[in-house]
Length: 184
Image 1 (cartoon, helix red, strand yellow):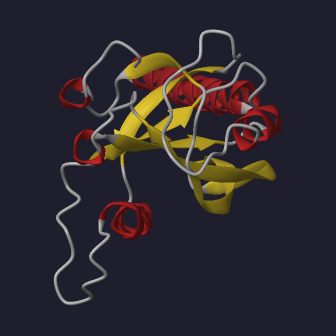
Image 2 (cartoon, helix red, strand yellow):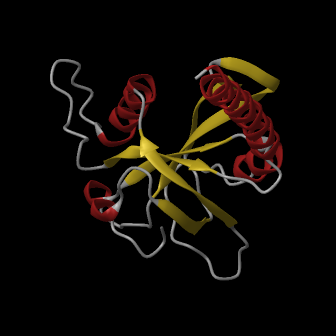
Image 3 (cartoon, one colour):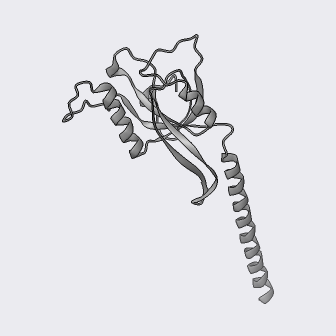
């Protein structure tokens, strides 16, 4: 993500990157792992942050995106990076290495994101006509992934369910075939 322009981002793209700055914690909610719409396991907090894509001296050229983290260690590390405004990277300062998947942004997060950017870039305080901040925002959310996520448990359970269903279907097919051959 560090070497990509905002125009190159697209849904379902797996990215990796590094940041030293996030400018706002936008929102947090509780999420559950689900199998066929049934919640499995404990709920987790997911936090959404505004992250500048690089640093631009002219604020009208600055691009911002949203990252979302569910791992408590990632959330703790990102909270340490909160600053009031974008800053250039300092080679002597450690940052946060991440990897994740780019997905479409929900309408609720988009509204919060746009409202925040109006606060930052719309300095005329005109409530009737806001500055167009569409040039400053990237309309995707980067969902950070973690090696310690509970997704492996969900995959094992889903695989077990599929195996049981497959065996049951095979048994039914075998019984039907046996009956056809013995009754004819």
